[in-house]
Image (tube, rainbow, N blue to C red; front, top):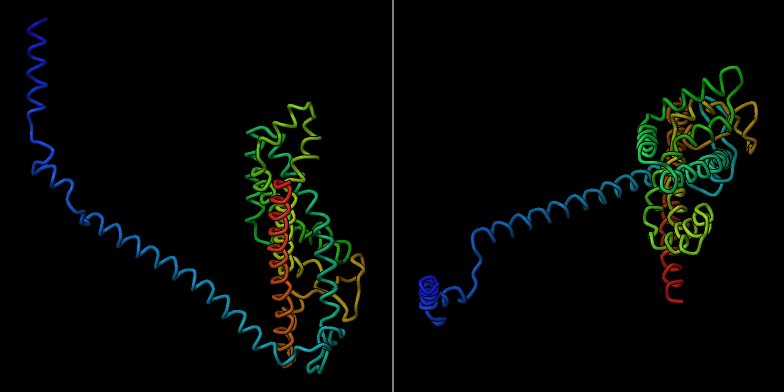
Length: 325
């Protein structure tokens, strides 16, 4: 034991007998810091990546600006109050005047019907995925929604054509059903993400009070996610309003007069199909009217996105107000 103690003591003494804190080695370690080669390389890479990100963002904004400028400049010759309130021009080789009021109303009616169909179903699907489904069922349903979201819309239009048009007639209702299929996965997936953001502590508090699971979902989870659900629905509406391919199969035949009956013998006038037919007609004025209708559709999508921002801000503000109280 004494030998071991001596060896240990000698070892400790050797370690302590090293250079003093004021020695050259420690002075060099505590000297002024200078960037090394690795640090300079990391800073250079960071600046390059930041510049690339800024450039990409500016390109995206610039591309949007070019599109908006192109639409506005080509639509300026036909934009007027009469263009927004008059009936569609009658088909012909050369047509003077005419507006898109029936197309605006028809688009609004079909999108409203599609929202009534898709929003409740999408919200219920999202609730099932987040609150009730098992892991395997949830994976299967999410996969189905992703496949439906990526499906070409022209296939959806062809499916509805065979289901509701063949043997019957084109109608605004068939167009609304096609648009609701486009909207459904968007509403369901976005609502699911919003529901997952609801704090688990709210559910646990309701469980601690003995509240049933369904009453917890109805009275706690849904009100907490209301703003996000409205945002998801508005985004789906903006997407559906610009869809053309499904409507070419379901409601491409329509009169030039105003109609709000989605079950009529012909389809409802709508802006996407009118843009397509006007740009392909022999009328030299049709192309300008197609640009005017495109401007109206672009303005609607812009207003829808602004509405989404307003709803999100209102939901955030009301949530902070409740927390403050």
